Image 1 (cartoon, helix red, strand yellow):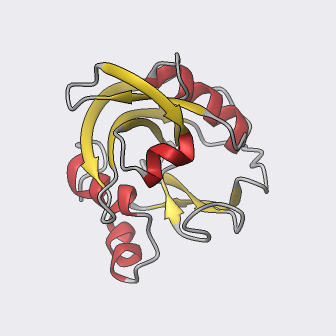
Image 2 (cartoon, rainbow, N blue to C red):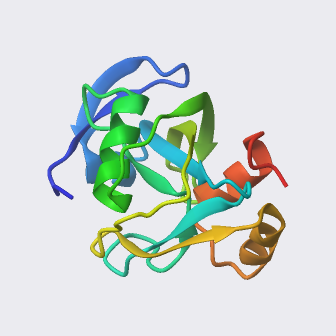
Length: 165
């Protein structure tokens, strides 16, 4: 992760209206883009990552792959880059959807969501990912109830049609 990452600032319709340093966009609550990938295996289980202790919201479960879209990137480019960085694979992406989300602290983001299919193996980067685990869709509510999930994952569990439980 580069501490000087530049991100596009967007309006609620996903039009670029400026740019800012990534952490300034968080601090100033400027709308930016985030890509997510849900990886499903042949048993229709979903792969989740437990974020490393070096990330924000450490040791919380999150989507299979996730990351901020850098300035000039599109959602798919960011998803491919993050997939290789976080879990060490390149998979075909399917089923793109986009959602607006506002974090509890008021920071708005546009979430670009993809799904992919693989039984592994994966090569997680320990700086990014503490653990990878496949879950039955029904087990996700237990994680949510134990407050072990990132807020974006909780939102997507209730919204994204491929994962809605």
